[in-house]
Length: 176
Image 1 (tube, rainbow, N blue to C red):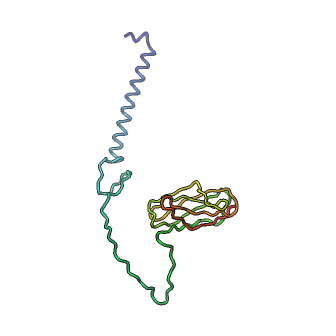
Image 2: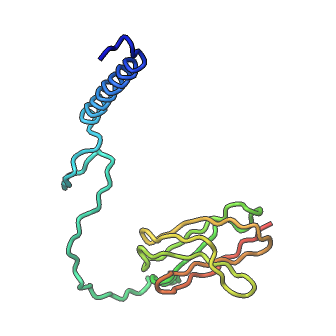
Image 3: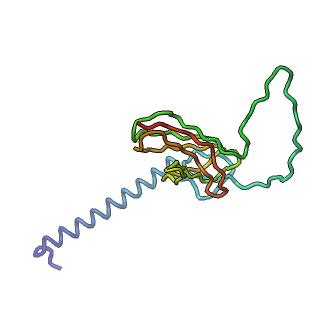
């Protein structure tokens, strides 16, 4: 092949060769850097805690289905009994009582019996509950989200468990 008569082809071949060499050296440098810093870790799981940023699920363990019998306790003299929401109910609260149109309305609450449940936010519209385009999950017995609305005046919200149809209390937030 006569390279003197084809300088463009010679330059193109040289350019591709340099690009391949730089790519290989760059990849090797990244590989060495990853190994040196310990990023990525191994694909094997271990019981020991690790400082790598990988997601690991806990290993399943056997749980006992037996429960200890509950013992009734009477309040000590001079104390008032406290009324608490039932453990299986959904308790909802709003962070704000009044907001401007399209300002965030924080909705938080507890649902002890609903771990992993998906909750649908609903708003009272024309005398009936309508789904609001917001859902959230229950984690650790609690949930939190926010909604935005431009509908002025009192807005009533509640949440409903999409599986069991358990509903929360209503909260009212005035927009405007």
